[in-house]
Image (cartoon, rainbow, N blue to C red; front, top):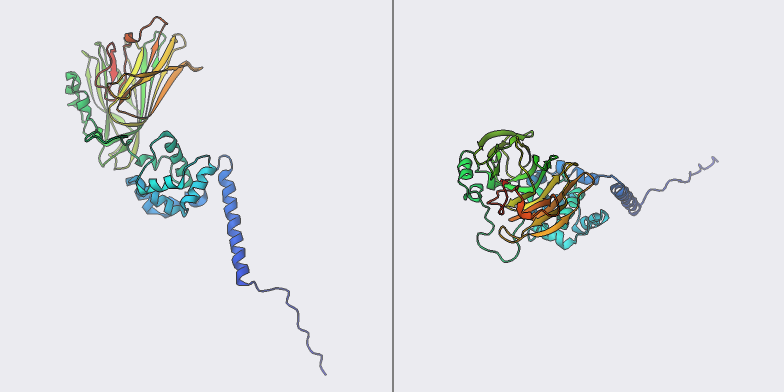
Length: 388
């Protein structure tokens, strides 16, 4: 009789469906943990799924260009695949606390981030969703008025209306194209002046981050006027902008200039406009820089850099609650470089500035320089002002 063949024992066991499912779940959990460690490590960028969000979802890219804010945020969250609770958790891991209810109100359009803390949270939210920095913030537009709504209160003053009380400025503005001024939202503005060893203004540098509210804006108009007759400053535009039409009126120290964009903007696009005013001799003597904000600005920064040979005795920032109200002041301290700065968030319409005394006996009424954004008229005693 032939020997019966031995049956080889099975050493491999076919996985059961529930085991295979468990393995897949564990693998996904490990992958999520690895991504979480990466996102929390110093200098780490957004999660991989988020960085690919814009490329894989053209609707998100389109809404980031055109808005509105609520729809763009809702589409970006949906494209990320994260629930509001997961978004909230990732914000918390980045040190930012925002409730799921707040996120819901933002994406539904009931509310929007406007306070400084909310704007900081929005920056972290852009990182969580893998969006370019400032992509969502650019869609916010100017801050909405708070309190009881007054009919017509949100209307933006035209640049020509702001300067209507000064005939020379009004006439000069008619020689340039100001039609786009009310179509550009001021997201951020920085103005810096540098003084020489005699306390006279050497130059003024300005940088604006603007958002087009509609298709077409192709220029930014700057206005600068000395009350004492004198040569207006020279204006220089930084690329990609260039200088357009320039109107000079030496009899009143007036300068009106167009800063042309490299191309017309589409609605929702942003642009950085940078320019420098260089003063010709005799340079104006300065004890004050003031901006009159005739339209809302999200962030406005003023800086004064003094020459080491001529440092002031005291410096104060000031800001009003409205264009005609009395200012509230705050003492400023010079930094190691001999400079001071002041910041206004969600500002305007208001007056905002910095004043300084060269010695303790100086009086604030001796100030003779103001820098403004559409300044309708400086306080008595000021001899120079800038319309932007």
